[in-house]
Length: 255
Ligand code: BV8
Ligand code: ZN
Image: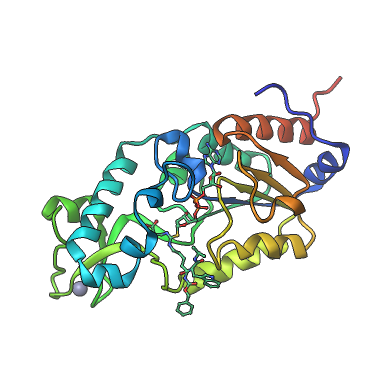
């Protein structure tokens, strides 16, 4: 992507910004080879979310759901963070406060070096006991049994430590995310279709609070019309160009 020119208005907001939120979805991990949920060829295209990512599906057929997550865990473990994840991590060197609020469960933001991170929908890297809540590494749990969920030492059944449809998001994490969206100066929404709630509500919150809004997504979303800047390019190209432009705005080369 060629050198990105920010408008004077956006450059001003970027220059003055102190608190930044990056709100990410499955599209950020697309260029790491991980399927999205709703886009063409996405995970859900071949199956419906209700079939697998719900407590009812797990109760009805724990083996099938466990095998799906074991497959996705393997995919994530073999994937590498892409230039979008790296650019997002680099933002932490450009602003005093950066919070990555992700819907993704693949752990790639952490592996790219992002330090401040809220995982709204949990993580595929951990398994948790349905009965006593104790957690363990998902890789170990799958090594113990890849066909059906293993049992905890308390006798309870393990499940992926993700938030399924119809389940509430971790309260503390959601409250922190609401705070970050309410008080940020710059809100960058990247790689999300912005249709899953309550996560997508963060965009509206940031908009109401007067943050400068940037969207990175090859497709339009229900929030595209309120964005101050929209980059309709793949995140792996757009994010490095955007962070370079942000860096030039905050530290203009001394002439
Ligand atoms: C809850 C973890 C209720 C598991 C996931 C209003 C209020 C509250 C709830 C609801 C509501 N309306 C509806 C609901 C129910 C539901 C919901 O929102 N449904 C949607 C489908 C309408 N919400 C819930 O069930 C939530 N729970 O609210 O509980 C409650 C209340 C009280 C008491 C009890 C219960 C829980 C939602 C969390 C579900 N878990 N994931 C797992 O991963 O297996 S959601 C799942 O969707 C993933 O986390 C995913 O991240 C998330 C959002 O999808 P996206 O990340 O946006 O991915 P998607 O594929 O959709 O889009 C990718 C985008 O990338 C596309 O736009 C594409 O154009 C773009 N793209 C493609 N390539 C690139 C790219 N962008 C950049 N670069 C590229 N290269
Ligand atoms: Zn247990």
